[in-house]
Image (cartoon, rainbow, N blue to C red; front, side, top):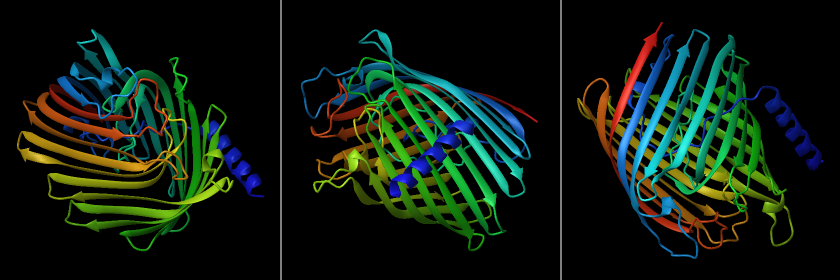
Length: 438
């Protein structure tokens, strides 16, 4: 009976995805906030078109914690490189419909190799509409062409229609690249003035372009429903169910059934500032070969959880934090990994013409679902100080730290060492231009 239910839910989710799906933006990166010219203008009607360009000189000091028997890629050796990152974003806001589109490139030129490496190209679009007084819908689609990344950090909360931020090459480990397509569909229907039901479905597919035999193409989708009830204007209770299917093209798949309960809490701090807190927790049942235990059972249970906090410290300073405990599926690994991950960021103005952004993230977990193998750890931190020269130009200095230790028990992609410590320093210019329409 459980098998029939799983197949039924899977087929319904696939039909919904094929019928109207569109997708989410690429994985969240632990990046500094975007320049002021790219921030949303709020909920007011109108349109805007923004163009930005980052040009920087950088140096990476990559310390190998273990020499290994593989030849390191450009991302695992020390050296100088040039960053060129143009981005364009368009937003149109109406009374009932909002549309946003973005595209760009993040390219790196390594002088020691005499060629451009690590180029990430991305494009995405999103549409949100209020179909009726109590009915809303949003769809989004994104495609990214990027090198293999070992990014296991959780994303920070965001209210952007195009969410999360465009990818970078900060966590790339090899020149091997893939096309990654992600899609999302969400709908919300109000039942009463205090109660509503929401549906959300996501699809992701990665297609590798190189000859690497141990990079696993991955197709995953999920479908979930959530009941929301407002206790008052500041507190909302959530009860949800999500089905998830992840299929490796080697023929193995993982099935997840998750039930979670959560709370959204808003606390006004002043007329223009409010704290946002959200968390959820619940059990997840895993089925499939990745859940195989010593006693031969192919089903196991793990407790999953997530939480986020947005806190405006002052009128010009903001802090955010996010936590996630659950399963991650990376195309660069041959199996799922179970992680505990936390991310923190703060940003604000230092003076009338300067601002500072700081972020840090940490994750740890098991290279599998049963916890039978050696755990891994990965962490990152960054700090960026920016000085505005005029309405168009700004200069900045940035430091990035990245560390991972995946042990020898986890099969790594060819050319990727199981341990790495990276220190990166960058100095560059930012060009930002924009137009607004009615």
